[in-house]
Length: 511
Image 1: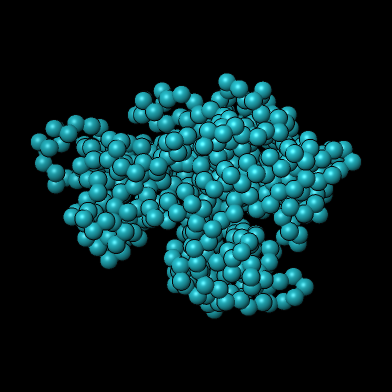
Image 2: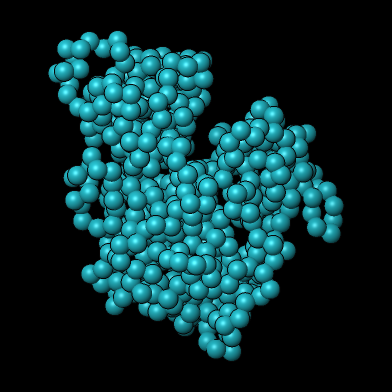
């Protein structure tokens, strides 16, 4: 789903965990409810922006608190805002892994992870694989400006643990990776001399720094295995990368009409203008069908998803109908009473959006098709657009959040579940092409094809969609991802962290 930016850490009153050192009189005065251990709760605003002196991410003027006050604020916020607040485990906040004042961010990250619900879905995956925290400047740069630290390589990781199957999914144009000839389909062998399958803490630290960097200016040596060539060594330096959400678009002439194809990778703010450009061009060129490539689109802003769905379906099918209704936890009665999220018919500049007015759309998916991308699928099905799914099961995230910032860190706990105009939102194990039940969607199971560029009619998933459209048949299915490989498996070595910012659904107040 999506995230709504809450820049004032105390803007929304949050319930707060209170330590046993707080006087009983103060507890009585604050009122509130109780945490999972029976301790009385006070307002989170009591702890907002009281930051640890050793927290380099916090404004200097706010470093008047401690790591403990930051943990108190976090526990308070989760106790009120978290969708599964009543499933928060009983965690000792003073444990060593949560109390290292020399690494405030790491301690808070560890504590946050420990507070997430341990419940699992029907398939055995963790129900909450998505809540996370990140430095505020990092999230702001990515979602508002489309800028992130990196080399231009976008990775496809079948598992966060070995064997990871790390391959280049695509390369952002104009980056160092593009200039140095890194190709889609290249398989990572080593980084800085560390195996791509290293599971030691030190090794995973090296991999995370090179593959999912938090900073610019780091130079790393990569060795790839390239089909038909062998090993290729490349040295690259991390830099501020401007993402290209619409990687490419085209109109394909077929014997049965013109088919538009859009490769869309992220619902960040700059995507709006790029999607408008793409739909305007497709409409001008007479496209009467659409293949929407969401295989690597992990989500982002919900308003972008709403605009995209509207541009596909048009006003006749969406007028007066719900794009998504957001259901919060039982404590949040005022939030639950809010009007449903609409199909957006205008841009943020209040200009009318172009539409293709389609009754059917073909969507390319993998396990990285997540959150806001799944909202597009679910919302279109909610207004009876015939969605056909080509590829593999999507990630399964009908949830979203309203980001809350405290002490230079943005917190993203799951806060709501989204449902479509028909009230459906139970797809925690994803949508599956030709699957059974409510999450099964007509279409074809097909493997991601790393031998061809994205957008090429010869690439496996797009070729399968065009063939299915032409004659209703599917290609012989190649081996598919193991669903178990898509999540983090507990208790087996160290795990790569991936890119949580790009696997989510965010709300934005202005929309």
